[in-house]
View 1 (cartoon, protein in one colour):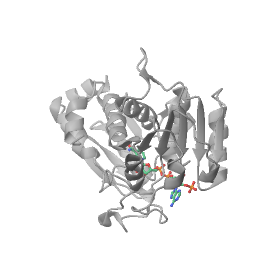
View 2 (cartoon, protein in one colour):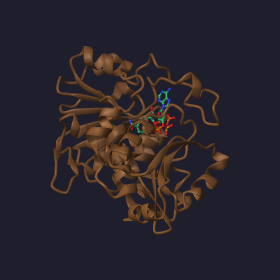
View 3 (cartoon, helix red, strand yellow):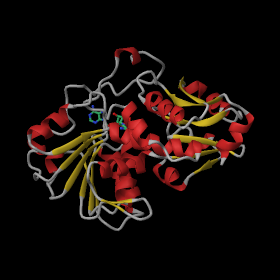
Length: 311
Ligand code: NAP
């Protein structure tokens, strides 16, 4: 495995997060705890990278001291052509969130997809299969958003065998495009909508917010770099009107990919209605754990990582 080779050559390894902004990220907190717990002599760093420095930053990972990187907003798509090999799932999703430096090549992966499924399973949804994948057979998934995270979620949910997938997005064309792409690989129906009023509630539903609506935008990230979070999103808003949420049956599970704040408006409304729900910290943990294993070849110490995240 690449780590052994790296460890022999140096005791000053580096791995980090490439994005703009990165200051708000929780990744160093739990990735460093995991590296320390396993005695891996590496530092997890924040690599603030505006678009015009992306090529240079990715090239830096070819240095023998670098294990690899996580990639976040807004570079997950832009890094695809910058790595030597892209994993087929990441290719299909069109986004890479993990790069590993292995045998002088840079390999790109997407761990958001499996990270979401592992997170849902950690909240008691679906069945863990012998091959480590999660089955969500029988569920209807309602996906809010059609951006990068929603793309990973849509392919993950389809691969987990949901009975139907409904993609609801502000711009209908984007939802239609994603629905058509997923449908190519999937036998069950995939619908696209842009008006929540058209949502017909189904039993055994999982509602997943993959829009930034309800997210806290830390003051210290405003104006940092070129990328701004969507100006239309506000912390006190929900991506799904309460009257629509109220139509869903009591066995509905609501998952918000947002983890800051830990209790979004959507989750508050779901709790008031007695629905089961969870925030995106579990997805952050599981996608990070998968990245950790890709970089190090070692099982991620999930207990250490979740403790560091105060889960
Ligand atoms: P993105 O690519 O920019 O996509 C944003 C999506 O949200 C688009 O579908 C966009 O709709 C929609 N949207 C944005 N502002 C909106 C508004 N005001 N009203 C309605 N819809 C709006 O972003 P992303 O990378 O997918 O990230 C989305 C969210 O997921 C972020 O909050 C991110 O932090 C979170 N996330 C969490 C994890 C985790 O581990 N927990 C992992 C990945 C992402 P249009 O297409 O109509 O513009």
